[in-house]
Image (cartoon, rainbow, N blue to C red; front, side, top):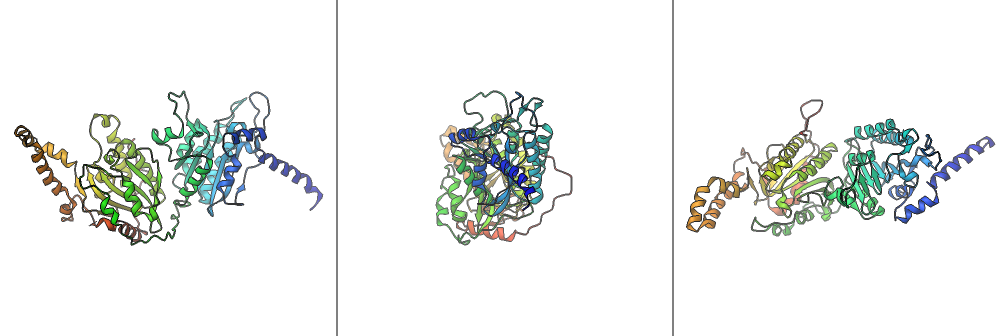
Length: 516
C-alpha cells in the first residue's frame, strides 16, 4: 500500500474511534447508570453477530450551536445501517442519547430520510430506536432542519404498507419524533424509561409513560421490562412478518400435529350463556404449541389481537373476549381491530376471527363516544380486505358485529360455527322485552315473570340458533359448516391451505374514503 494512503486511513480510523466513543465516556456512563444500553450496544444486540454495516458514519452537525460552545457530534447522533435479524436483512437506526441527549439535527434527519427510502426500495423491514430529547435547537432556530425532517416523515409515510416499520421507544421521544414513532406499524415501549409526549404540560403522573400509552391512548403494542426485553420482543414479532408486501410470511415447521383435536374445547364454554369465559383458553388450545404473540394486551382487552401459527403458517388472530365487557365492540376495541386488520391486509397475512360478542353497545354514553362512526370504519375496512379471511363463530354474533367480524356476506372465505352459535339482529333478551312487553307486564302482575320470560327467550334462542338457521343456505346468516368444537384447529388449518393462492379484486379507484 502506498504511503499516500496512510494519512487518509489515519483520519478514517480517528473518525471511527470517535464514533465508538459517542458523546464521550461521561455521557455513556450516565446512559449505563440508568440501566440503558447505548445506541451501538442496542444495534449490536439486535443484529446477528458481525452482520451490521453502518452507513452515514462520517456525518456531523454542520450548524453552529446556540451558545457558541462546540460539542461532540459523531454521526450527528444517529447510528444507522443494514444488518441481519435472525438471518433476515433489515434496516436499523438508533438515536444516540449520549450525543446532545439524542436530539435530532439537520444532517441526521436527512440520513434517516434516505435510510427509509433505501429500506423501502430494498424491500426490508425498518427498525427505529428512539431515545431522544426531541429536535435540536441551534443559533438559527430549528437546528433539526425542517426540510430534512419533512422528507423523513414523508418517506416514512409513503412506505407504509410496503415494508414493516417497527419502533422501539427506550427513552424520551417527544414532539414530531413522537409522531414518527406512532406512525410505525408496531410500537414497543420500555417501562420506567420510555416517555412518549407530543407537547404541553402533563396533567397526570402517568402521562406519557408506557402504561399510559398501552392502557389509555392505545398507541403502544408491547411493553418491555428493559432494553433486552424490548429487543427480544422485536425479534419475536419479526418472525411473524414478511420482509415486504411482496412476500409471504415465512413458513415454520413447528411439529404440532395439524390434525390435533382438543377434548378440552368442550369444557371451556359455560353451559349458561350468562356466564363468561376467557378466550385465551381457546386460543391456546388451537394455535401451534399454544404460542400466541398478543398485541395491545391491556388496551380494550375485551378484544384480543395478535399473531400465531396454524400448522406452521402465520395468521393474525382477532377474538372477542367474553370475560371482559362481554366482548363488546365499543370505540376503543373498534380502533384496535381496524388498525390490526388493515396491517394484515397490507401484507396479505390471513385473518382468523373468533366471534362471541353481544355487538355494539347501545345508549347515550356510547353514542357520545362515536360508536356509530367507529363501527362504520370497521365496515369500510372489512369490506376492502382482500387477504385470506376465516371466521369461527363460537357462541354469540349479534347485530352489527355480525358484519364487521366477517360472519355474513362481507365475503370472508370461510365461516364456520360451533353448534352453540347464535345469530341475531340484537340480543334475544332485548327482543323479548321489545316484542312481548305486554305479556311480561301481565306475568309480573301474576307473579310468574321469570317463567314467562324464559319461555319466550327459549323460543327466540331456538330461532336464532345456527342449528336452525343453517338449514336454509340462502339465509341472511350463513355458515359454510357447523363443526364439532374439537375440529376447530384442523378446520382452520385446512381452510388456510385452501385459500393460500386466493385472488380477490376490488373496484378500480384512486383511493377509498374511510369515515373520520
